Length: 114
Image (cartoon, rainbow, N blue to C red):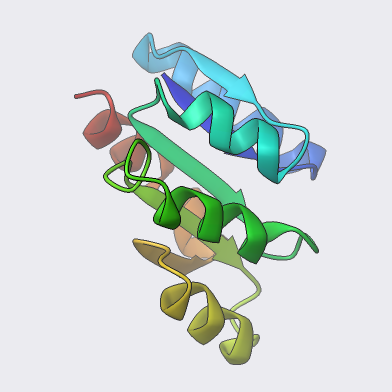
């Protein structure tokens, strides 16, 4: 199962469509706490780094031994290098631009299928 903290409907649709094609279950998280709870049974966590609670969500995953090993992927505008650096420092496993995320999404999901 893949859990995601994404509110942008364009990316929600991309995640759901790609996951459906690969036969992977997805679960949307409304906030950092919900992402953390769902990540306990997830193989991958996806976070839109543009969200105000993105770094909190990543910190919760990182700081809990039950979720620390769950791979995480964050995406953001390519020019927002400060947010990219903050996400990496906050424990996000892979940080990428929105464009790269979109292009790599099927491979990311397949790798998280476990």
